[in-house]
Amino acid sequence: MSTETEPILYRELTPLVVPPVTLEGQAVRLEPLAMSHAPALAAVAEPDIFEFFNVVLRTPKDVETYISDALEAAGRGVECPFVIIDKETGTPVGSTRYLDIQRKHRTLEIGSTWLAKRVWRSRVNTECKYLLLRHAFEELKVMRVQLKTDRRNTRSRAAIERIGARFEGILRHHMLVRGGVVRDSAYYGLIDSDWPEAKARLEAMLAGR
View 1 (cartoon, helix red, strand yellow):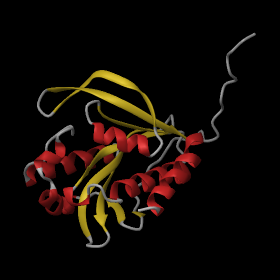
View 2 (tube, one colour):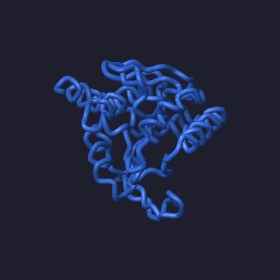
View 3 (cartoon, one colour):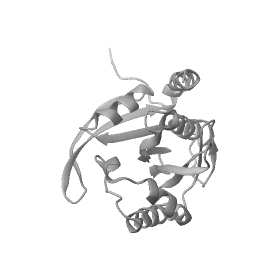
View 4 (cartoon, one colour):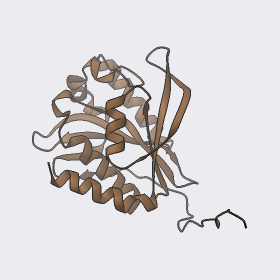
């Protein structure tokens, strides 16, 4: 008897398009990232925030370069960057984005996320992930969302697992970061059929905080 499963035919066959959008939550608002956000982001970009990040943002110039690179990738249609606004104060507290947008295959990644220390261990990161995942699966109709982080970043890995993403493996010697550090990346994924359970989990987490 064959153990192979029947091929899955995906319902959305048109190329994925990810236009700029504002996503509104209870505590945060995700707005399209712009160069005008550079001063406020530089003010909260403490170097030790970026221990496991690809780059370290130490100066206003670093932040401007970071935003410029993000906007260039957005222009090519492979990324969609956001600034994270704390709705209570109306000020930026970090950044996140859709990246590695695969138009033909209707998949993307959520990543390049960093937050000011003052909102660590708050609802901000959870709500950001909820807004991005809900938009990706319910509005953009993606097939898969992936997340990755430095293998050694136990804090980030625990946060990813808490939202219901499945661990898919380690990509060894995946990239060079922060001026030559060799990084192994831990990969996680959510597919469209995972979303209802993950959505319920995230909404319960947000309701309980």
